[in-house]
Length: 307
Image 1 (cartoon, rainbow, N blue to C red):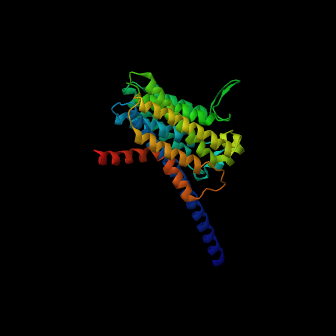
Image 2: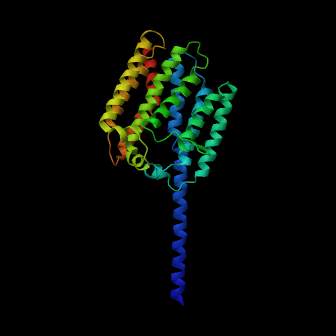
Image 3: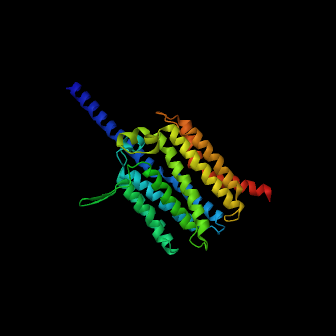
């Protein structure tokens, strides 16, 4: 009798521990889901501020915050909806409560779009949100289906084109000339195209299994490296000429830092490694997502000493 009591209690203890362990993992994964887009949103808000600087327009903190909220909502929506390749590429989100991510995405989008609506830029809020949904899930009406995923380089083009328009559009809404806006769009569009391709190198396995033809999957590591390097050099030559000729604000520190940082990222992170060491992942995050933070921080320090 006492033996049955002991084993019954032990079984209940194991079930209780298993339940608590599952709930703990689920909470951790949900927290990871909610915080996974914070850095990219903060970086995006600072990129909008940099766009204001290049266009020689007084930066609006509310526009930058609203832009950051929209960016957070789009990336959180993508992670919450999930996709086939995320099973391999984002294992840390496995078991997360997707509905919480969806609620967070909708709330941040509503706040961000409300601020932009008051500034007459509501269309720019919906552009990345709708594009993000078409990329992640797509739409299907009868025999008609549209999904912005799978084609060669489509993912990178969507990222570069969408966020290039978003950043240049928000910062240049009051700009009287079209050429500076086009140049800012080109600069950020190419930069974000390259950054998304760099991140594709760590997702080669998952993208291959899902049949997504990213540049590293289709062209190979070496060819993709050379292509990205050529784009990087071309975009910064164009930007440098624009600065010298006064089309954009004379911000040599921004251009120089962006140029050097981009070279380092393309050289170091365009390798098809199966396992990425933790320190290398942290370094890549700082240089890619943290680039705008570093640019503005160092620019502020440099300005203090030069004045």
